[in-house]
Amino acid sequence: MTRPLLIAPSILAADFARLGEEVRAIDEAGADWIHIDVMDGHFVPNISFGTPVMEGIRGVTKKPFDVHLMIAPVDRYLEAFAKAGADIITVHAEAGPHLDRSLQAIRALGKRAGVSLNPATPVSVLKHVLDRLDLILVMSVNPGFGGQSFIPAMLGKISEVREMVRGRNIDIEVDGGITRANAGDAVRAGANVLVAGSAIFKAKDYAAEIRAIRTAAVSVDV
Ligand code: DX5
Ligand code: ZN
Image: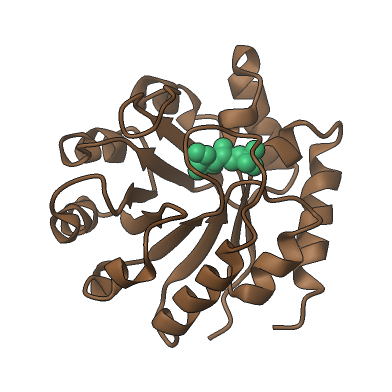
């Protein structure tokens, strides 16, 4: 099953003093999803923002909010993120004692459910929850910060995920250190959703950068 290629700029790299304008700019520049990185200073060694910020930008764009929760324990916050305008809610495999329960809760809120795998987390954690999944997010850096380098060993992991979900209606997203130089490798390995923070927001022309990443990715023969 060939899935559409989607580009999801991470607003973690945006200018927070002008966040509304930044979100509008990436929407107009051709972003497919808006990737929203929520960090709690506990599950990851950094704090970003929470539901009030999401609510503040929800009115700026109609694009889906792809919410990446790097928080633990996560279950008690799922409803708040659903109400704040999330379309996809992704939790880390280690973010609660009961991954299956977290995924059921996300779908019960009417949202698409994702699981994120840290670089050292094995693909096998997904095996028994595949029926509850809409998205798998393969971290290609250790979560917590933007601007890190892509870990090449994650390409093999993306391929493993692709084999595991073959024939299912599940997106494979890659997050961390994505640039026009490695977007093709990620798609060749099996990803169809590319998150990019620094690469897009550090560029002068967001539309040109999104186009360059998309072109690098679609020129791949999969
Ligand atoms: C890292 C976040 C990523 C990150 C991507 O914890 O999940 O979404 O912000 O940023 P870049 O593209 O700069 O690696
Ligand atoms: Zn992310």
